[in-house]
Amino acid sequence: MSQEFEGPGVSGNQDRPGAGPAPLNVNANGTVQVKPAKPWYVRYGFSLALFALLLVLIAWLLIRQQQADKLPDQGAAPDFTYQDIDGNDVSMSSLDGKVRLVYFFFTNCPDVCPPTTFMLSQVQDKLKADGQFGKNVDIVSVTIDPVRDTPEALRTFGDKYHADYTGWKFLRGDEAETADLASKYGLLAVKDADGFFSHANLIVLVDKKGRMRQQILPESSGVPSSASADDIYAMVKKLM
Picture 1 (cartoon, rainbow, N blue to C red):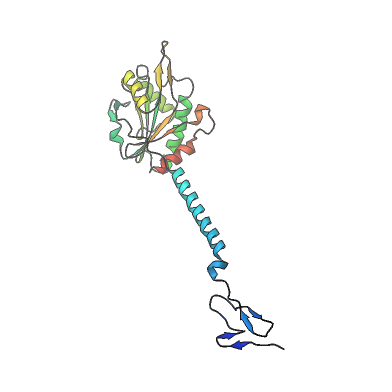
Picture 2 (cartoon, one colour; picture 1 turned 60 degrees about the vertical axis):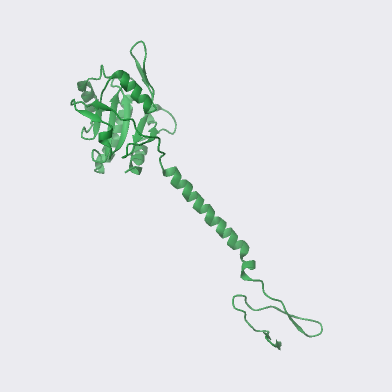
């Protein structure tokens, strides 16, 4: 047998919107005592706070990932005007509007220059497949040994790596000026008493506005975590 308690404003089967049925207690004297249900924000407050904290954490991780994907602005790329293998003047500023990979090298280099140039040729091929090479991206190879690296020597070197000269500039200028220019790009290029050149094997990534965005250490340097052709291609794509 069921028993129903009724009274002014109180019913044993009364529903409260959003709170559920109020629990009833029967006192010893037979009177009914209603125990109010806890408000929703008390019952679910901890869960809601935990959910809000999770959202904040996710947002923070997304922001950190976006920041990691961005390449820092390292300042304006120093302008210069050198001659290409056809004797034409080419200035760095004239290439604004394109992403550029700038590499200081010399053709008689016995170690890192040939494999690094080969890797740049791989990047060239990837960009040609996209239809971007020479249109939106250029490679600029500047010799630090212009005395021996004549236009003919540079062309022979470029041909060896199947360079597409519509987007790959092999440039030469004054030797002392080039050493100073390399230092302005954050690279070391020195000549010892025996005429041998030493240089930092780095590729400088320059954006369309002529801003230096990254110094890339290529795989040929033999250092862990150095960049592959795929890595360089991905960096270039970020700036397009």
